[in-house]
Image (cartoon, rainbow, N blue to C red):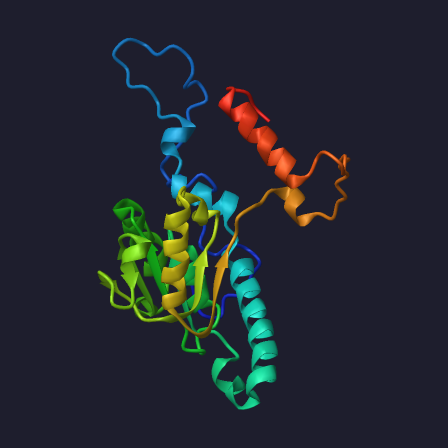
Length: 252
């Protein structure tokens, strides 16, 4: 599969036709759960035949929509800011050109970023600490681009990739950390270090895109009603109650 620059489809162009990632000669034996004859090889199960990366991209990611949202949000915010500061800079900073995808996995967002606007000079950089998924990204995703040099992948810690770091990368217009990647940082100091690292590696008017909550209800309008006793259920009272029950081994 070679993805051309003129591809225009709502379909995720980075997915295989078979949703499970099965090869042409692969098959799932309907009797795989039955007792096998002694000495015969057990047919592979559906899970064993599946391509986990293809399944993840199909179930979780929509890079075409993500790139469109990133582009629209960046242009909207930069235009508002530049309009109030210096309109003469709008031609320089109105459009984002470079993107870095932290915790990139298969780097499908990097690939879509450069594919979706081939004449804009876009470049993308992906960082992930897992060498196996970086290898998969290079062989299955980046290799399908018309110009593979537009994407650079780094196998390493996101905190060690960037300007004057172990893995040297240039400052970018956009840093994307999607699919709740910030939840990798369980300690406050680590999260703060990452946010400072991102700030240091953004160009002027650069933006960090991330998500910290999700689910179908997060995009639906709804009303949530709660009742409070304003005399006793103050914030300080609730925290004191939580600490008291926590010390006693209870829950709140």
